[in-house]
Length: 403
Image (cartoon, rainbow, N blue to C red):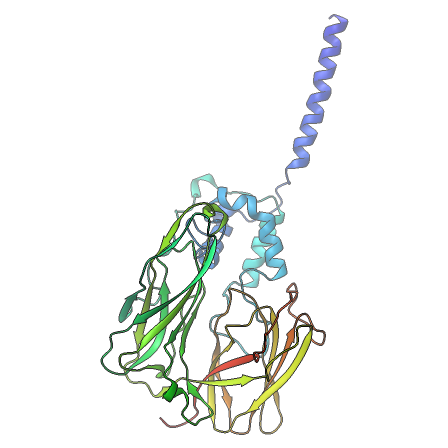
């Protein structure tokens, strides 16, 4: 063998070793006993598939191995930080009907898979395709109202909010047990608030509670909660709905014109026992532009049952601590909540919260990152300005006894 050929052979061997070492270093070893096809896909399908699907509202699909593989590390980071599934209430004494159902065992499987090489699994067990949901989770509504006119987001518009007035056409007072929104184009419908157009005379009636005009706070991926035990919202005859829809494109559609015509679904209650009303706990108007720690509350003057709680939809990036104090002075933590933009929702109590007369609702609110409370792990509080408005916490309540 010539000297030249020997040098070339040695050089090729060295390059081969170096290239092989580099390839070995760029691929994680497979250490996960869980695979996408067998273990991870069923979790992602059931817990994430409403949003993280092709043409869904999330910026990426996780419904195929090819889709999910590049996002393994992001899945790990988001789940450890508590950002996914998106639920901004801390675990406490009270449980909520609409809390994410993902279990600790399921989270452990996803984390193990994401850190253990993201194995695909048996190629003979490729999961069935998943498509974006285009039906009503509670079944066909009693009344479907199409939102008009159709909305168009131009190619150079990535985000907008539109408000619609929708006539119900009802000729008599009806009772509503649930309300839902069915997006026409799920990829751009980010959240919505559905309420009854205000009737000033009815709202001004002297009472600690007022008719609850907000029928639904819709966020993608969450099934509507139907009020139980005959409790229901009252829909006056001939009422109009105000539907406020927030649209936002994901990066796949940023330069494309997009259209939407969503629909509202109303589910009627047959014979309601009690009207769901609003009990509001509000601070004095806030004028501070800097960090602020507000403490405020309200005493209950009649026996009530609280079905749900929601922050004022105008709030965002505020941390709330809400406690109920019984007439005997027993304090019950109700919720610890980081209010985040685009995720305003009702928090439905798993069991109604008894508020006997003389109970007090205490609220502490942190604005602009004020010290004094520990927010949920991984959820820093960005700046928030409240321009002369009170901070409000809204309870959905019914009388504790009687019709």
